[in-house]
Length: 423
Image (cartoon, rainbow, N blue to C red; front, side, top):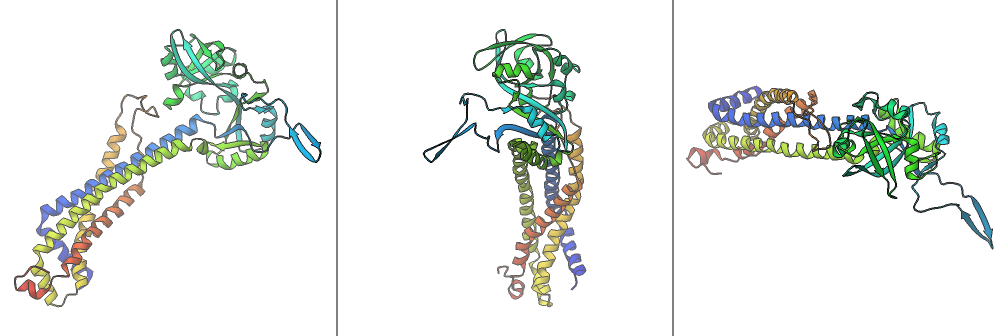
């Protein structure tokens, strides 16, 4: 018998048990729909995080950690021993990039660079009357920082950067930080350093990046003010942010910059590896958990196949007595599993598409409880998600029918025809 004949027999078996066949196929359909939706949500979530990271951090970050050691100030040779002396070492001093203008000049030949912005980070305590909250102030040159981390487009007050540039004691704060301090535009707040020095500043604007942790802890001040708060020289900074022409080439650009300047340079994906991996890991765990829906559907297919075989033992005995091979019997019941799987994914895949469309259209009030501020669940639905689900669904159904199909070949035709149903 050819495969067409075997398929006809399998179809007749399923048609005789329509209700059970449809219910089993619906189990596969539910698994298919849920998996399509989960893959789309996982991709949307990861993509949203990556997009936010790219928009809110420099593409390449130069830190104050030296890769190429500094040349010692003096080399002293006494009695055959060589001593290298570096002057003015203070263990309490913050690590800085000295003569940052020279570093900027040394990396200026890199063609990929589009913007360069030196900065000074300062961990402070922000105070507004009786309200206190920790924050991190980033001292920058406003017109250089504007395009480095998408700051310009995240401003709530559009001219805030221009106002910061001509306000020496100005500060640009995250919108959540402003809420914590209960402070608004042109209000005066006080920044307290780790040495308990106080610096009164004026709020010249707010920004909203979409990263809740950034918006509730970060602020921008002018570079000279940050240098005074940290007690470092006017030609020193704690880091330099770079924006590249092609974000996907940031790793290569970071390697070039590091080789030229001698300071540790990291691309955006290296700097934020923990955040990106956290979302990818969560997405993978979710996919595995939803994949168990297919396992349950596979158990349903196996149960149906076992029931059909028990009801068709006499048919099996007759077919075997007529000379049908055991492999053909196995193929019949595996074809039944294949048909159930095909019916399930044909129903489930379109349902998954509809669910994705409905979820994508839902809007809700943006929450500040999570990592990102968003008013929707991001969905990225691609054809390969449906292809994966279709292949996986059919494969599960076929594999689930394999064990019952193998069992069908173990029945002895003589004993079945005598009324003995056992093996």
